[in-house]
Length: 150
Image (tube, rainbow, N blue to C red; front, side, top):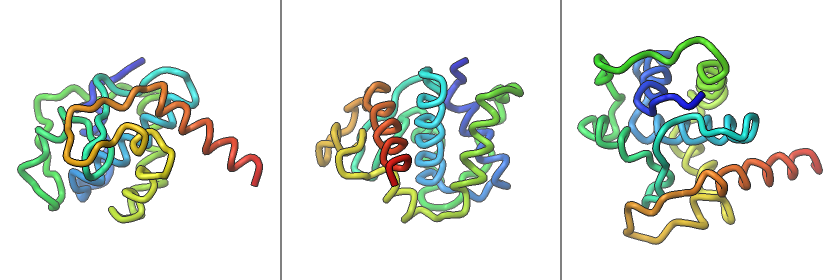
């Protein structure tokens, strides 16, 4: 099941104790989306991530949270339904557990891999360039294969 992107962001922000910045929310959500694609072949969230200067960005989340700048995103999700129990919520929780405390620098590094989906579609200064789910899935598979070979 694909969940609304703002519901997924709400889950991450709430479970983190409202300490994640917009950048951290974006990167953790992108990686959770990648994990979900890799495990199920289906997208985790609605809409598409785009290749922006600071990495993969989901525009709907960016516009909802941009007022906070680099500060933690407060609860701007009052009108957003929660992610129901199930695989999608489990993957979001797992992503937060594994990535929630690594810091923005490591999250940026993880999403800016040379040859990865973001890098393949990024054009400096250009917004609105979608990162196809097929490219995100291909990156997941390449990482999995590299880890299995190691």
